[in-house]
Image (cartoon, rainbow, N blue to C red; front, side, top):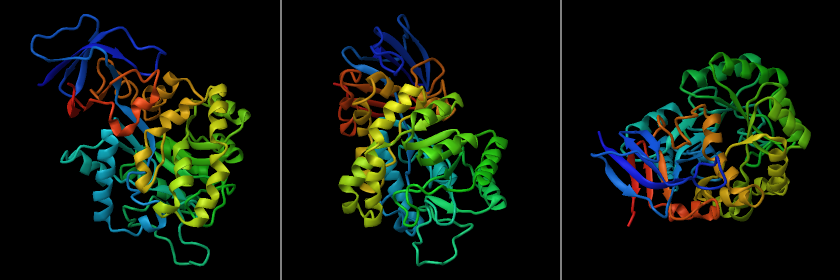
Length: 410
């Protein structure tokens, strides 16, 4: 079993606004064995981190690893083999940015997860919802107003982010099928969206009864429901129905944010995607009708961060980028840092995200018994969040499960 001892490690994990005193961190195999000031080993490889920062591997709680193009209707028509190759490229790039775990909220399948575990190409840990559930004419229905071709009820392409289901029996069956197929939680489209053609932002997705039925199916399986949401009305009714993970939330009000916090829900803002959809969407293939919707939610995004923070609503890190825009994944740190203290921004991508994924103590922390998912940063990200950007340029070491993904310490 390989042993590595990180010495003089000042740890930043989002739990404090200053790095720790120098610590010793012993890694054995894929796990962290011990953390403390007096940890030693006679057999371990020793790495001196004096002047550097040690962090848990980062967690992005809102990605679509199969979204190889911003035109999601087209993406769902591409061959599975092409989507697979592109997904591995995207995931490898995420890992090299320091994201050792990502939560896919629509599109990735258990077969893709199994492929990542073959270990031929390094990827982050992949937590999935399977195909997102959407109603006819809702977000994920890319047919357009003049296309009445029937939607699939099974046999979905890998590039399709979601599946269409209507009525209580059908949504129950869809949720059960996704859970049977390996989904670790259920994602629903409960509001209009930017990328789909027939659902303005204010549209409410699914009836209350349908959402309650989906939540019951998830809870029966010991898991939770995540929902795509923008408007305050949609967010409020989702929380009332038992939805646990609130994606985006750009138009949330203080009252609803407090209500969601009281219910123990999580929010996953994704502000970077709206900045990039606005500036780069057209060149990346996003249809003009979708671009016209972007500012409806983009301009309220920064205010939503303050509203949710003041309400005590837990916020995990999310990026939600598409196609060539994935390169901006880490810029969400800097965007949030304009409004929120740096250690809280980092917390969103460490222990808060780990709690949302129900992997608290195993990821998002530098502690005994956790996976040895670690990054070393050249500098202190608490004083400069941009050190977490630039495609991992300031990360001389990236480790996942005790294995070096990058080891360029001089």
